Length: 309
Image (cartoon, rainbow, N blue to C red; front, side, top):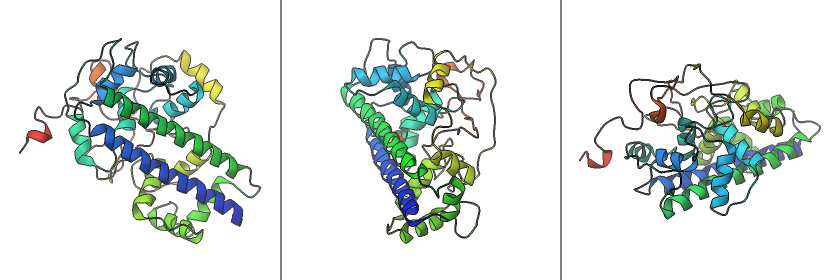
């Protein structure tokens, strides 16, 4: 069992996750509501060496070009959160997961059907898109910083363990955390969360798209970095491209990688302790991608949803 102070710190972490995720969702929707925005064009803008991957250094360079100053370690933490194959870089699919809204499926589909405008090595995006994209990345970094601080405050408690924290929320021993027992835990600690806030917390941590948290998902998220980030930065600087794909089953309830689902999650497509990979093709590397399927997920039809009527 957790003591009163430890429960309070756990509550503060969960509330911060929910607040940050809701702010990020509004930023995603603002970005995607810009009519000229296309995720592939934004990917080309940051991927200056055109190797079909985005590294932490390229994100760092992009932010500095827009007068946002951070460290490469923080950029790598952002990359690692969305990295699906643990090669220390973002593929197009990973990058799209960071940008598309989770609560507005229609807007998500419209953005995926927009035409791609090629961005050259020395070209820039329109100013409003650049500003909104930088704002989204900056808010992601802010949330990661706050999470790490609150995780550190939690881990120094003598009575804290990931299992004890999980059981404290899952008080009915159901084996998972859902909106019901999460809301009850927050209420017992003096915070009355709305259904939208509870979904935001779960969506941020959930990696398999089933709208509930297993112990593995919860423990992986609150445990923090499993190894020093400097080691990962060295690993990513000379990592080679993976040549084999993995195909793990997705939930029937709805995966964050399936755009037709009513439940979308921006959470990373894998965790440090359990992996999942994307089941969609890469438009930029259709012939070489190990995840190749029979068409691009970003051009499912030639007619835009805006023109169907």
